[in-house]
Image (cartoon, rainbow, N blue to C red; front, side, top):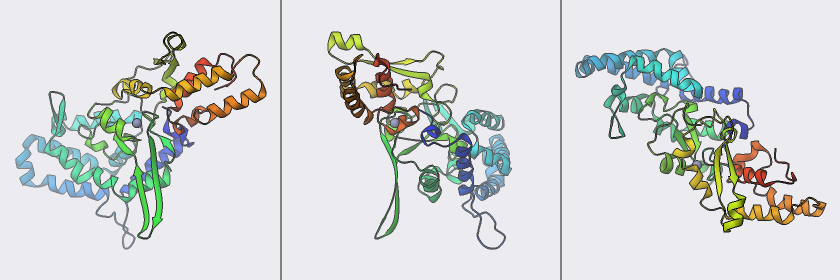
Length: 347
Ligand SMILES: [Zn+2]
């Protein structure tokens, strides 16, 4: 609901340093000797894949497509191209993909039937032999990036602002333990864009409900969906509490509207954010009722103190704190919209 770097209080430059750390984690060199890259490094994996694809048996099997596969692996063999795939910023990902699809045909990687995508053998080859997300997710680079570098802790999912995410480290008798209570969503789908499977800005830390239940196989694109490292949901959307509806009916209703000048976006719709966040409005109603109980033109210092205690525990007064509170944006927008006396001074 706000950019992750805003909540993490890091600059775009510092965030990009983390993307570079991701590249370095994926390409560790041996400690001794000539300091060659390890066999598990991305660079070495590309070398091995190049050898495999250049074999006559492979080329005989895939014919024209085999030549395209080979050309693509050669493209990856240029360390600069491979590095830029891993650290490309959100707005650059599409141009990178366009470049790759000048070398490969889409059906070299996936086929689509009745809205369901399937990976081709070459698509699977890229994921299994080079851009191995499963190994990354269960390995040391993942922990280093999200626990040590980004220090993801005490925040809610940047998509829904509802489900808590946590990276936890502790010690027990067996030694150091780390556990991540979060998913990484592939913003650009792993099936269609396997070469982005390890790209830092294509991996969005989020909750399992957003990733698996709400998004599933829906296709996201930086031009049509707000990307949590690139754009700020809070700049484009506003939640409004319908006071008239509440007064007449006794029920609460919160609308989600596009702000003036807000960009066209499909994220809110595709993740069902409005129905999910407004399904249970008890807490919001209590906040609104609390405001109306204490707020008036002649509010006393004591009443103000009570009101701030009531609201401060569940509502972020500062925009940069939104992800630290469940439904932080919704409750903040609602209170801002009903604060007729300007007492709360929510910026
Ligand atoms: Zn979520």
